[in-house]
Length: 203
Picture 1 (cartoon, rainbow, N blue to C red):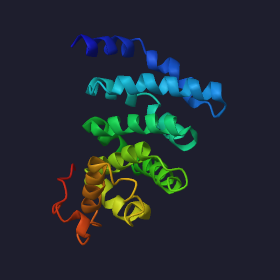
Picture 2: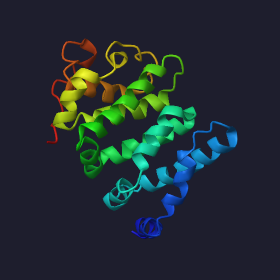
Picture 3: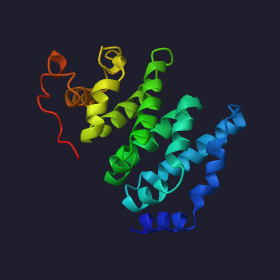
Picture 4: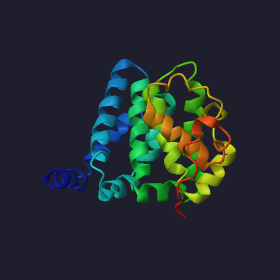
């Protein structure tokens, strides 16, 4: 309780907003990357609290566009933390509802996720892939997003490209399997025979 209220005081003081200029920079030099990563780390710690009040506050700011920007041009570690933040926002029903409220928001997120997947074969990162898949899986919980993902899910997630790199990560393999079943790609694949039903959708 005290931990959550402490974060609430920080939010009431709009402390995260003072970090946003560091996320908005396009410089890839080491000093700016360090500032970017440190700022993301603070926000990542905030969203770990799993408090809808925190998500509501962040959604009134530019946190999603700033995270998407980092997911496009940051270092691997910065991309991973930024994707984790987006994941935590999506896992809250308010956050998911915000992202899927308009086609523009949904496709802004899915386009960045798609580009990240396409880059992974040349720059592999199991940690990053894990958060990307979890974001896609959560998006597939929404009926409209699920329908859109049937058309725009990256082919690399459906063609066993990442089978070997996920060999030791049963949790992420399970998420990917459930995602593919949700969007209608997994029913005929023997590796998904234990997952026979899509997860219920959120209207």
